[in-house]
Length: 276
Image 1: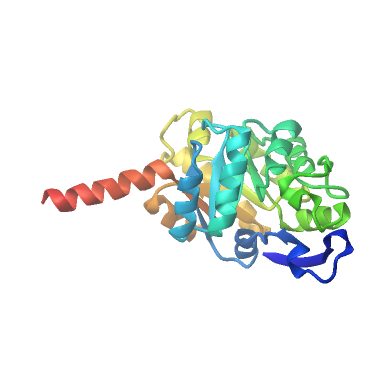
Image 2: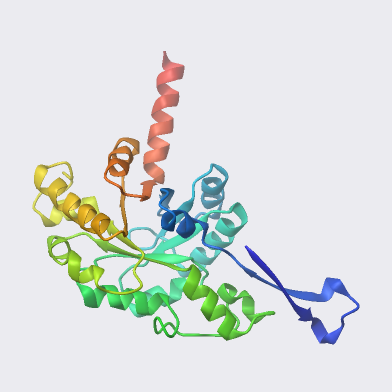
């Protein structure tokens, strides 16, 4: 977290308590990924700042606030971001759709990046980047008084835009056969940090709904992973512990599991132990 003193309120230099401070969170999860380390996250699909707080306190690197499949409102996203910041975990959001409006709403709530669904070609990827980044990297609307910019207290809009462009993360989801075929085209778009393969939707797109372990689906996923790896970029996917270990062997570093999977695993282990 960057802490910058920007002067006193009302020009009063004699009262340090009145100094205005600008707090800009460093995207530590993005730092790990760029250094080649894996970053482990948890997907949360219902509104709960408390769960986000727990995820951070349990040692995860990031939390995916899932607005595509979950029941999370824009107001709840902001509260979950507050909890993430307090717990030291990076908040990433998945918008309902890959649209400028949906992404900008989430970015203005203070998330540190998005995981955009259904990115099938270069135009889709470019739309995501333009919604996340300010000029000159994108076209995100620049507004005063938002929490994401510390309400404008103690920081200029130009400083905030520059910091935001540096810290925010862009992840695009390749989850249908068309996207797999277009992976090189998608990777030609500047500003994308992570290329995520969605095993569930991809399995459905290839004719094997809910069966991501079929050879055809695994081959498609490995094609994306190897292409991304060959260009020195970051790939991602999701699954349980066993799946995650397999992804790590394939050089995948942007990884998360679902909260429900964690609960099921923990509950199963507990009941087996106490039931004898």
